[in-house]
Length: 100
Image (cartoon, rainbow, N blue to C red; front, side, top):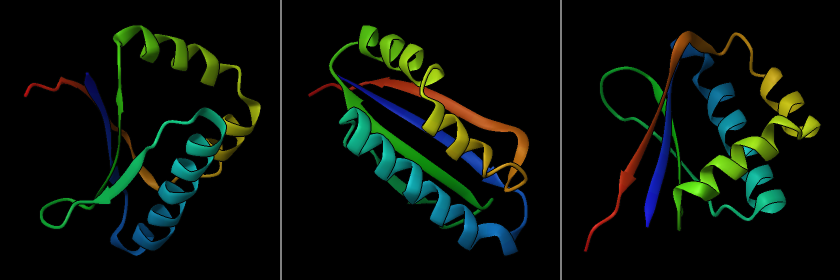
């Protein structure tokens, strides 16, 4: 079992409400369309960051999902709406192997 996490830093504190709304909208879309069971969190201390995460059975599933999302016009349009909310180059993806 693996956990995928994406973290993105919000550009300005004033953008946090819009960034949280966007994050929830993306998670809802991916959960309905691709059955991900994705969750969203907001970092409490330090930089204003949004976290998306979901669990997957295999790394092959992640590769397949990425290929699917690149062809998903609705998803791409949704992501494009958030331009300007996040610091350029501040998206960080992590995959963790879950043990125990």
